Amino acid sequence: MRRFEAILFDLGSTLIYFDSPWPEVLSQADQALEQSLEASGLAVANTGFLQKYEQRLQEYYAQRETEFLEYTTAFILNTQLAEMGLTDVPQAILRRALDAMFAVTQSHWQPELDAVSTLQTLRQRGYRLGLVSNAGDDDDVQALVDKAGVRTYLDVILTSAAEGVRKPNPRIFHAALNLLGGVVPARAAMVGDTLGADILGAQNAGLTSVWITRRADSPANLAHQDTIHPDMTVPSLHALLDIFL
Image (tube, rainbow, N blue to C red; front, side, top):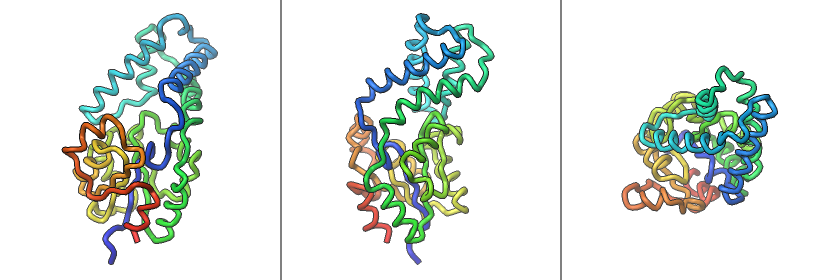
């Protein structure tokens, strides 16, 4: 009997990559958000809304990195609008504005060239495959999965927005394995680019950790490279085929 039954994957910088400078795209996305809210009758332009919204986002981002709890983007947006006196905003308006914002960023996420072929081969070899993504919006991740053309190969797609906790909290890994039919952690591996979330999280949850280094040159990874050590390291998704036979 082979060692592994299931393989979990991160999404961003693992199965897909961002093709443009993030600050420029973020500015465009914020403008799309504001324009959508204005079109829905919410007078947010010229009120400092975007600056306040981004500041609140950064505060929540810092908080969730210590609590490992997820605050959805919709919650943060609704909270900011309420603070500005715009209360009881219909969910449909919030969703439409967020969709407009994410449409901008989604256009810059591209699938890795070896993503589909690797997942297809692993499925053919009999592995159960899942996605575990830290993200503030589940709809955004679902759209990115479809854009990348990988949904058909994934048995489970689990986001921190849906689960309420973020990697490296072991709970999200265990939830994914339960959705895969109760695979025990010792029979599963996690593939990701982030040492603090993917690698440490997998190890804390009892999974084998596989660090993919193709797009792993981030400040966060540099800060952890002497303290978090993956069980395995690969340069690309295709290289996984030499491990999971």
